[in-house]
Image (cartoon, rainbow, N blue to C red; front, side, top):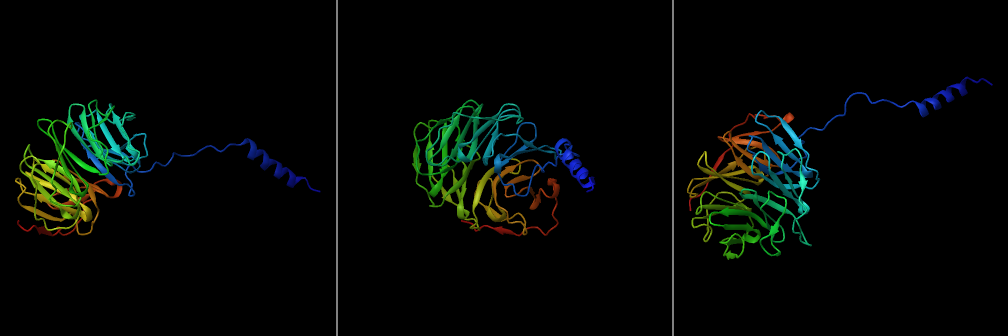
Length: 341
């Protein structure tokens, strides 16, 4: 019998036991931004970067020159919002009661362990800054939390209840105003110690609120609701805006002297300085993405949600292939004028 087959088998066995393959080339890294990403919050540190927070604990930093970087947050929980006091200190909140903060410009993040929790639900949906090292977070089960040490520790300002607060406005003289489900509005004149509910003019949920000054404010919500107050939140009037699409966010754009908001199905709304006249349209006829945040900047207004892009002079510029600005060539989106009240 020939021994050659046995020699071959023995050689293969020896190779399998003692020869270890060496890796060749480098590991393929996923792109910083992926098409499956959803983003819910945005912040602008003092160094001209812009941070976006969203699904799977992702925070992405985009520099002024377009460079993108994923920040190591240490969490896989979806982040709903973030805020920054300066170029070093920031905080983010999200699902499952997660709160993380950074003291080194986003290079590292730490989890805040001192966060009041509900036994029912613990999603935090919005952050607002209230001054040096102070911020407020709102969310499910009546959550309204405050930090005075840049996110390290938190305490509750309202008792737990079966309602979700979606936004909070910080006004002069220790005044706070929250808006939420079922059109609810509540005001505190002493920094959160005592509260007075305001009779809501609509039954639909309010998603965001912003003030131009101590008196003039705008709240927006589901089914195209736009409310205006001219006395610091004590009384509200519904404005006539020609849309029934949900509006998820509103902001005062100081540079352009207008209100700007975004929502479902690529919806945008703008309002005159006195919030009396409103216009609406779609960012692009071919892009019906939803957006939960708007951020006015000198270059344009960022819309953040199912995708990210800038909107300026009715031109929509989404971040596209390779996540560099991709300029879409299309006819301007039709503008739908509101009916005057």
